Length: 156
Image (cartoon, rainbow, N blue to C red; front, side):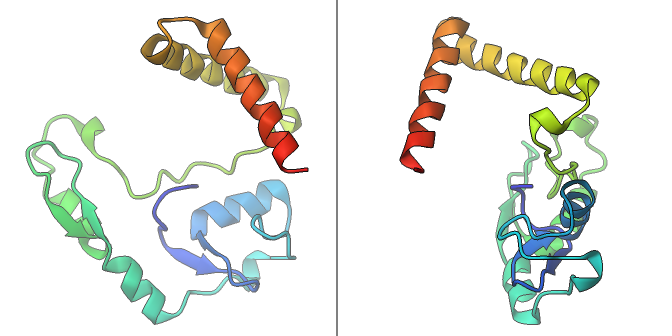
């Protein structure tokens, strides 16, 4: 999910994931590790070693609330956020893990889901074009296409 691990679990191939993220990924993509494609089942997931959890919980995270801006240990992050309940605007909170579903390949989605994903992508490209390229969406799309081609050639 590209977020800080929330309720981390370890696979038999020693890769670490958020519990909810790996379970969703296994359900959507099949019973194999998304990192190395080694067979992986929900029953195989175990809690990581205590030393890893201690290191993870000792990471410093900066509070996203403007008036606070305090550094808090990850293990105490949720408790710290609950102290800001008096703040009126709830959207300023940054959650440790969005808990979003695993991303599927665009072509494997239903037509309705494809439309939604493409609409989301179009809005992101448009916002980027307005911010960085003076609104020239075509130039941004061409640049992205060329970068994708270059990246594909570099992996050969």
